[in-house]
Length: 365
Ligand code: UDP
Image 1 (cartoon, rainbow, N blue to C red):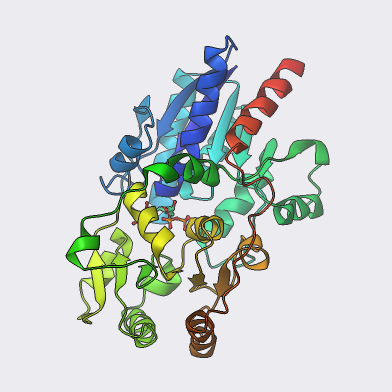
Image 2 (cartoon, rainbow, N blue to C red):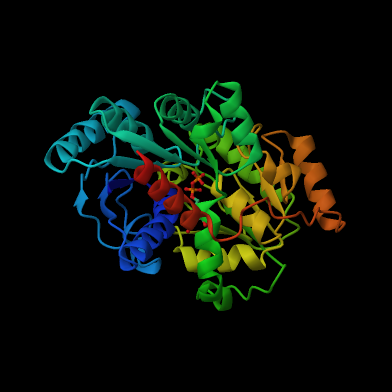
């Protein structure tokens, strides 16, 4: 079986790493399974790309489409043109796409039009918010996917409601958590820990990159001011995403306890999250990681495509609502935060299950 695996952006790299390991293990056992890894170049910054390949031992991609930045349409078009050429030159039996970024959707469309089967890892999740480009990517990708690998019973239910036959839905768990569990013993205390005199449970980690939070300067300014006002002077460590940096550059954001830093590598970032009093974020993946590490997570969004992180995990949605934010911080300081439980099958074995299913499917076809 020849597989083409697509990765384009930071969260994708974290998701493909365990899939590549599972394929490699099966190959070493004599299974006729090969893969080509295609990096679309959607994220190209060293801190968002190369560093993850290095830290997570992801092999060098067979091809980098080097699409770079651009509008949604420009990136989608560039990825589609490059990926069509790739599939023409290197035909395969299956394309695996992960997550919900532009590359996920663009490559799924190209594969399907080339009559190649598509497997979507992290299928079926929905926020219901069509203002998020990711939601459109999820909907389009799932509408042409052949094999749906899901992280949660919520995702299974969505897909069933859409009429996807049960035989195409594979509830396997969460590949992001495979990576988290494998690398947890290697988490690294960053040099800033000493430099800022941090101590466990006495600081916050903050990340912001969703357009609705970072694309309007005045609102971003107010949001940060509100977070700082609730921080009780504890250090707020803010690894700034390049998208956010562009906007922050024009603002005079300066508070004694707010520390703006470059995006961190995976091992340092998750060390900080693990020991934080709480993480404040608009990321999707971080809500899952916080849940598994039992770290309180305050999410600056009104919706989530990962409701299990709220229902079972440590996540609370506060959106941009001052009252909800205040309630959340009060709950945190009074020690009332839910410890949460780890969702079903988030056990570090998801990629193995995915590859086992694929081998069985392609044997029988
Ligand atoms: N992450 C990281 N360094 C950082 C911020 C995030 O390694 O400075 C990791 C984080 O642990 C998670 C992933 O990046 O695995 C989340 O990516 P992002 O928030 O960009 O994407 P989303 O999950 O929202 O799609």
